[in-house]
Structure formats: structure tokens, C-alpha cells
Image 1 (cartoon, rainbow, N blue to C red):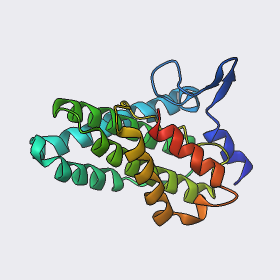
Image 2 (cartoon, one colour; image 1 turned 90 degrees about the vertical axis):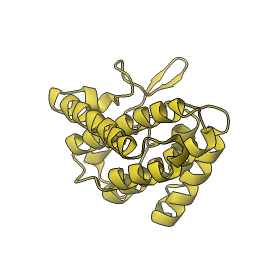
Image 3 (cartoon, rainbow, N blue to C red; image 1 turned 180 degrees about the vertical axis):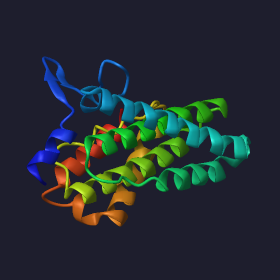
Length: 195
């Protein structure tokens, strides 16, 4: 990994009780809170992610069609691939994923749950982001916690999310699931799926 890129991803800090990952204003990674431009990128992405999910739900609006709704959401988010390793691009994409996670949880809650299913959708989205960033940056030096943790960790969410995250990444970017990236890959799954 290129040395100048690691600063973009190094969003964790240590405290007396362990790692501190969330910025003071919600899920925004600290690197995205460091400048007005990065904050704007994150906020723009956040609204975009919420809007993508809201529009998908308006087109379905049926709790009996959560599978179809999930595929529409995945297609919408996958249409927005990361465009470069700049702080602006990463913060905008991170914001979009955060907005999508928040709105997905709102829909799932309104439909009465289905924790495992929600975990599977979040696991696939988190796996996609892990692979995009790993390939763009030539691997990650730290766990991918710059992507927000899921809003919910209800019963059944974590094991379902973890399994799909692992499967997705092993198919999409297998080179970044083995040494020297194995520990980062494992930690990324834990952070994304176990909140």
C-alpha cells in the first residue's frame, strides 16, 4: 500500500478503554471530519445513500417483497463505484454507504425485522466496499472501519452478515482475504457485522 494513502484510512484512535472509531457527529469517520470539503463529501454521500434506498422502497413499498427490494438497493449502490483514492471520494462513498445502512434499517424495522436477512444485505454491501477499497489502494493497513458499522445488531444479524461478507470478499477479491491481508480482512468482518 502506498504510504500517502494510509492517512486516508487511519480513522481509529486509541483511548484507555480501546479503539475509538466513531467521530463526535455520528458515524462520520474522523478523517471525513477534518476539513470542510471532506465533511461536505460525507454529508452529500449520506443524503445520496438515503435517497437511493428511499427511491428503491417507493418503487416496491411491500414488506412481502424485501428480496426484490434488496436487489434494487444493491444494484443502485453498485452503480456508484469508488472513483479514485482521494479523501473526498472515500468520504463521499463512505457517507453513501452510511446513508444506505441507516435507511435500510428504517425499512427493515417498519417491516417487522428479519435480522438475518438484513445482516445478509449489509454483509454483501460491506464486502463490496472492502473489495473496492482493497483493489483501489492495493490493500488496507487497518480494519475497514471507515465504512460505518450497521445500525442494528439484532439477534441473527451478526452471523448472517459475517457469512455473506466472507463469501462476497472471497469471490470478489480473494487476494485480499489471505496473507498479508488476512488479519485486516477478519477484523473488517468483525467490525462490519458485530457493531
